Image 1: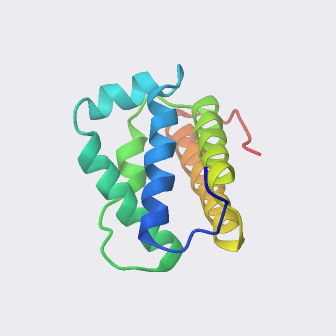
Image 2 (image 1 turned 90 degrees about the vertical axis):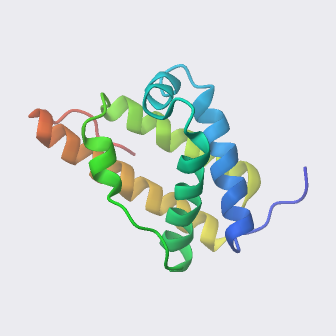
Amino acid sequence: MTAKHDITGLDDIKVLVDEFYTLVRNDELLAPIFLFRLNTYWKPHLEKMYTFWNAALFGVKGYTGNPFAKHATMPVDGEHFQRWLSLFNTTVDTYFEGPMAEDAKKRALIMATNFNRRIDGLKGTDKVTLV
């Protein structure tokens, strides 16, 4: 493996997204949910995630969509978001280091926390605090 560097653009985002979703696809908790939702449509999902993270980290226009709406009806709770966040942070820490890498982890925490709270609100529950 090459030396770690900061996330600097789309090529690095592709590494982050591809490696992260490799972990997700092999995770006993998350894989069944993603496989049920995406089945054979991984490539379009990955392309959308490249665009999402490029917009989130670098302000590059092009992402359209409502990420929460896609997750609101999924059978997920705090445990799933905690695992998602753990795998995301592991991926970032494995391949990258620097201010943008830290920003990616911070944004992922905010997104996971907000999604978890909103989904719990829809279910009428308030269970797990993500750290």
